Image (cartoon, rainbow, N blue to C red; front, side, top):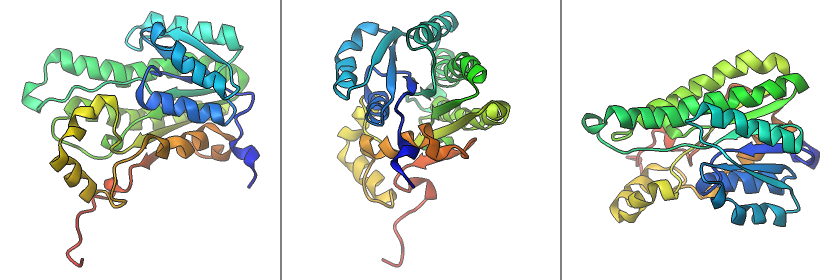
Length: 261
């Protein structure tokens, strides 16, 4: 195996939701591997500082406003990126949101906000990007899911539904677009500390409980995802499609403290 299997030089990656959190880690990892990066956020003014980080890796960046809940915003953003770079080789469908409420407290608006952002938005961004990928006969689409693709948690009804939908959507799109040289996979992180879930990590007892359930005995660190996103974006995964890659420290095994310890 050679480094060329993981080399993204000459590739252009669109990463949605790069104003903060895991989206920035995904973009950094791809830039370090050689890709030029299209950065997006609903507020494009939040991107210049991070664009500077991409440039520090010797890569080009292009920042554009994108609201994944707005169909016209998706179309115009993808068109602007293609006009700037000429093509999009890699899509990381990262933009997402969560509203934590017990099921009886979830409102109609809460449900729509989460599903329209995480599931509908991911589909229509993928659709817009895939048109160009199909013309070129090449593409890597990485839908960001979570451990809730395969496990249910109280207080995460809409979020779990959206991420379970991402897993199913990934398989459908892989079957739909494989004949065009496009792979579609789902990268599913476990419990990672981000601004979105920061409040949960202030609860020491909860963190201890969580850590005890993870076979590797710690929550994820954002750079634990670097290798996985580069793998799915590169030639090393050319015969992998329709799959969900869990990077979760093993929590999806359902492990609990052993009675034999």
